[in-house]
Length: 414
Ligand SMILES: Cc1cc2nc3c(=O)[nH]c(=O)nc-3n(C[C@H](O)[C@H](O)[C@H](O)COP(=O)(O)OP(=O)(O)OC[C@H]3O[C@@H](n4cnc5c(N)ncnc54)[C@H](O)[C@@H]3O)c2cc1C
Image (cartoon, rainbow, N blue to C red; front, side, top):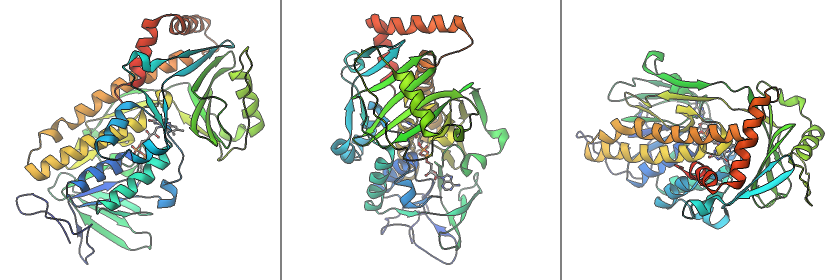
C-alpha cells in the first residue's frame, strides 16, 4: 500500500494503489477516465504520486466512444510537453485551413498563415484516450473501470473519501488527499458540491442544437467545411480515412429518431451543395445520430475543499469551435501540476489559482465558439440577423483582418 508521509509528501509508489480490508489509501482519486482525468492522472503518476482512477464505463467503451476529432495547438502542446503525443503525431493529420460555403459559393480560410503556422491536428478522441490509458498504466497508475455508485464524502476534510462498487460488485472505499472530479458534465463530482458553494456564472440557452452524425465513409474533403445555406448550417468534419463526422443545425429539443439516414443525407447534400464540381459521398451511419446542445454553462470556483473539478465537469462549451477536449486536456495539466506542488512542496498557491487560470482559458474559448456559431447558424425567422450574417461571411472571405481575427480565436488558447 502507498500513501503520504506525515509531512504530506507522497511515499514512493510500488506501482499503484494497494488493496486492503479497510479503506484503500491513496494520494489522489481521479473520477472519470476521459481526457481531463487521464491527463491529470498521468501528470501525477509520472511525479510518483499515488493515483487511483475510477471510471464508470468499461475500458472498451472509453477507447471506442467517438466524440472530438479536432485538437487545437494549445492542447497538442500540452500533450507534447508530457510525451503523450506519439500516437497523435503518428496517426493524426495536421489541419491548417478550413472552408466556408455560403449560398453555394465556397471559400477557404488559410487560418494557420495568420497565427505563425499554429494549426490543429485531427485525431479521434477515443484513440487519444487509449494512448493516455496506456501511458498512465505504464507510469504505474491504477484504474478501476466499470465502477458504479460512486459517492464522495468529507470534501472539506484532510482525507476525503470515495465509496464505489467495483465491476465485480464489491463495495469499496478509498481515502485520499485530493479528489479530481473529471467525470464530465453529468458526473457525480460537481453534484457533490453544495449548491450554495458553486455558482453557475452564465448560461446561454440556444434555440439551436446540432444533429451529430458519424458515417463510415471517406471524407469528401481534405479540410473542414462549414456550410451555411437557406436550409441551415451543415458541417463536414474529418476523423480518419474511413470515417467522417457531419453536423446539421436542428432546433433544440429535436428528437434524433426523427432523422433517419435518408433524411440526413438529403439534408447534407442540400446544405453543402456548391456551384462547382463537387460530390458528397454517402455511407452507412456508424452509430445512431445524437443531438448536441449548443448551451453554455460555467461553474465556479472549480475547487471545493479537497475536490477539484476539471474539463466538462466544470463547464459546457458548445462544440462549434472544437474547444472542449482541448480545455479538458489543459485543465488536466494545470490540475496535475498544482496538486503535485501541494503534495511535493506543500505549496498550495497553484491550487488556489487553479480555478481562475482554467476559467480564463475557458471563457476565451467560449468567445471563439460564440463567434463561430453566429457566423454559421441561420436565424430562419430573422432577416435582420441573416443580413448581418452575410456581412460577417463576406468580411471573412475578403478581409485579411477579419480572417486573422478568426484565426486567432480558432487556434487559441487551446
Ligand atoms: C459530438 C461531439 C463532438 C465534439 N467534438 C470536439 C472536437 O472536435 N474538439 C474538441 O476539443 N472537443 C469536442 N467535443 C467536446 C469534447 O468531446 C469534450 O469537451 C471532452 O470529452 C471533455 O473531456 P472530459 O474528460 O472533461 O469529459 P469526458 O470525456 O466526458 O469524460 C468523463 C468521463 O467520466 C466518466 N464518468 C461519468 N460519470 C462518472 C461517475 N459517476 N463515476 C465514474 N466515472 C464517471 C465518463 O464515463 C467519462 O469517461 C465534442 C463533443 C461532442 C459530444
